Structure formats: C-alpha cells, structure tokens
Image 1 (cartoon, rainbow, N blue to C red):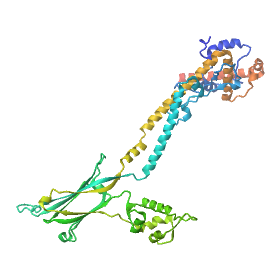
Image 2 (image 1 turned 180 degrees about the horizontal axis):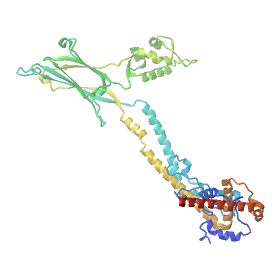
Image 3 (image 1 turned 30 degrees about the vertical axis):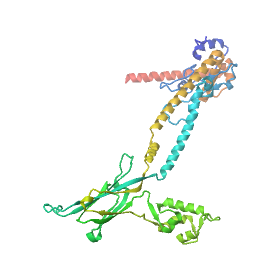
Image 4 (image 1 turned 180 degrees about the vertical axis):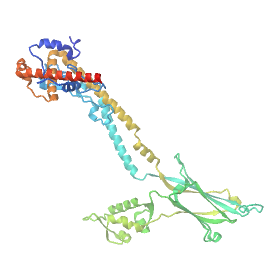
Length: 476
C-alpha cells in the first residue's frame, strides 16, 4: 500500500522478492573502498532516500524521477533527473530567473499568476527608478541655482561729544555705519551668513574729510575668512559724510562681464564661461557660419571679424580668444549719506539684490543617490523570495517523487536504482556494461573470487590497523 511506502527504501524487501531472478540492479565492477563509500553516502545518502540533507540543513544533489502524466513509464533515457544546487541564504547576487517559479508549478498553482504580475510591475518600476537615478546624476553635474532676493540694510548712529567724559572715545564725536542683510523668505534651516554672498566689500568715504590714506575701508574674502552677519565702520566726525559702497558678489561658478561688442552681439552682459561659449555656438548655427567642407572652421561674418580680428578661425580656438574679451563683473554700487542729524538716526536704507543660492533640491537628490537603506531592505526581501521559491521547488520535487512512486512502485524503484547505478559509475570513474552486470553469470567469472579475496584482505588490514592503534594508545 502507498501509505507504507513513504520512500523507496520501504519497498526494498518486496522488490528483492519480486525480482529474485535479477541479482541486484546495480553493482560496482569492484568493491568500493571506505573513501569511495563515504563519498557516495555523503552525496546521495542511504539507498532509497529521495532527498538527503546534511547536518546544517542545506540540500545536496537530489535525483528524482519525475512523472506527472498518466502515460506508462518512459525509457530510462527519457526520465527527467532534477539537480538541485545548494544555495546560500546570504547570497546577494541573485539572478532574475531564480525568483521565477517553473512552468509546472504555475500550472499546479493558478494563483501564482498574481506573483508573476507583481514581477512584471517590479521590472517596470526598477526601470523607471534607474532612469530617474541617471537623470538625477546628470542634473547634479550641472550647477543648480535659484535666484533669491537679498535685502541689504544700511543704517548709522551718531555719538555726540561729551565734555565730561573720562575716556578719549567719549570726548570726541563719532559715527558708526552698519551694513547688514538677509535672504527674504529663506526656507533653509541653516541661515547663510551675510558675508557669504560677497567676494569683497569696499566703503569709500569722503577723501577731503579723512585724507587719502584713511578714506577706504576694505574687506576681501580669503580661504580662512570667518563668515559674519554684517559689517560696521566707526569713525570720528560730527558732520554728515557721503560714502560709496562697492559690493562684489561671489559668483559660483565664476561669471564674467563681456566685451561691449560681444555683449551686443549675443545679448548677454554677465554670464559664466560655459554659457558664453554655448551662446556663441548657437549664434554660429543660427547664422550658418560653420564651414560646409571643413566643419572644424568658422567663416566669420562682419561682426565676428570685428571681435576676433580675422576672416576664419577654428571653433576650438574660441575659448582661448575669449580670455581677452572677458572682464571681471561690475560691482554693486550704492551711494549713501551718513547723517549726524538726530532726526535721521532711526532711518534705515533698504536695497534688494538678486543673488543665486544652491537649490535645496540638490541636497535631497544627493541624499537619494547616497542612500543605501532601501537597497539593503530590497536585497533582504529578494533573499527571502529566493528562499521561498527554492522551498517551493523542493516541495514540487517531493510531490513528483511520491506521485510517480504511487502510480508504479515496482517500475519506479527499478528505474530509480538504475539511475543511482549510473551516477555511481560516474562518481567513481568506473566503466562497465550494465547489460552484462545484470546477469548472474557475470559474477561467476574468475575475477569475482579475486575481488572477494581482495575485499576481505583490505577489511582485515583495516581492522588490524585499528587494533594496533588502540593498543598503542593503551600502552602510552
């Protein structure tokens, strides 16, 4: 009965009785030694075991005769032998095919179509994410700036002289000028310092009042500059002073003022070097100045001839020729009156300046590219999916084994033993003729007596060595 035949080993005695005229379905041409026997059992387990697991639980190579159709058994050459490779659960390099159930499993479990639909959706999602990552990487290579308003506050205070003051500072009238600023509607958590927007600041006072050596107050950025929220200048004086503030913005990347002729031609006043070259190339294409025979050269029109001093030039020469046509950008000039009138002390002059700041989205994009938390979670889920699919495949193998065995126990055992015999010969590198070996007369030939003698001789020698080792240990 099928309930008693859980494995082929359960029917082994019955098989020997029914096939008594066949003295064994597989035999080696010579007895296996201890090493070969251990290697055989380590690979296949005891005879009749459908699946062998080692101590760690990982599945080794399993041979199963799969038969799912109701037709009679096929010849041994047509019988499917399934090999299941050992897979580490911690493997991160999973192929896409490892997560796909086989076609037979999909036929047995119609609900698996939902899983296939999820895989198709996952592929589309992965492609979309990959395209977006590439777009973000390309976007990060270009400067990402936002135009913002920097509000500049200019104020001053006047300290009149006090005759009763003990210190020298209080006995002389003085004024103090303050220059401060901040970004309007700044959403950033970290506020940028006022000085971070400028490369230099120069305050020019009245030369007649303070002389040629003391009428300039300058600040220039250096690599070790400490950023500040504002500037203040204090000078002695009791009369109103006219001053001029020169503010040079710190452009990143650097910008240049164009030569007046080139600026009129391109319609650009101040811009980065790359944008200027791009505008020149656009002008060349629009006016078809590129040589039709030699694409490397540009045939200059009358405007180009005035600017570059020649009828023809290579486009690769333009960056070098631009060096003499690019000037430092103009500073921001503000004229201010430092008033000592008490009624003007509370007045503050405000100016709005257009500045460029880093796009806050750039930081988020960089964080997205550098983030590995999601990747680790995805890899973990992929490992779980792979292990689940592997478990389903193992259950499918066991199901096919039991199904084929229940339909034809005798034939199945015979074919299974033939398969094991063939594998044993491949493993031990033994050649032989299965058709001769299945005959009883094959084992009555003279070589069989010699093989038996050698077998017992080897066993006796092995036993003798074990006894000698045991006696040597006891004597020591």
